[in-house]
Image 1 (cartoon, rainbow, N blue to C red):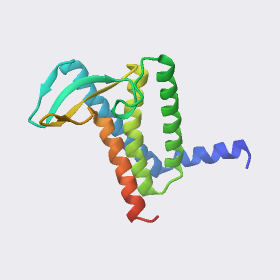
Image 2: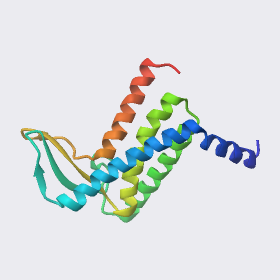
Image 3: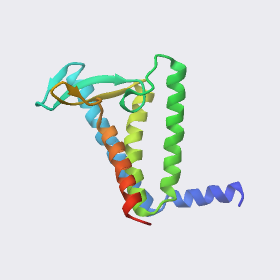
Image 4: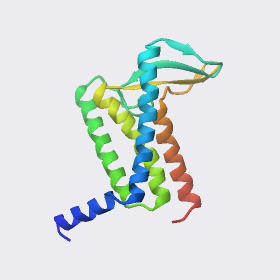
Length: 166
């Protein structure tokens, strides 16, 4: 199979009706994340807002990956991590295109969240995290809506891997 026929097959696979629906689902997740971050950035600013005994909205800017891991003030490290994230999202998209429907659904959840955080890395040079879960003095890592979808998608994929054989 030559490059042109591979490209044609990719194009045909990309525009399948089912792929369009799942891709739209990922876009909806992306916009849910963008909307939540817009509200926090523009209305809450950098003040902590008490919601109840277990949750606060507290805007922090994460320059690392999930839960602040690999945070660094080095632009080289930041750009390297951002490039790796772009490659991972591209690989996930390729896997998405070649998956069956249940996995397409799962990957669209992960991709939608990943695109939300990737957008922030490109536009803001950091990801706004703002959901602060806590109990007494224990605080979980601060996270955002995109992180919820990424985690949810990964958990569903793991559960599916154990219980649903496709």
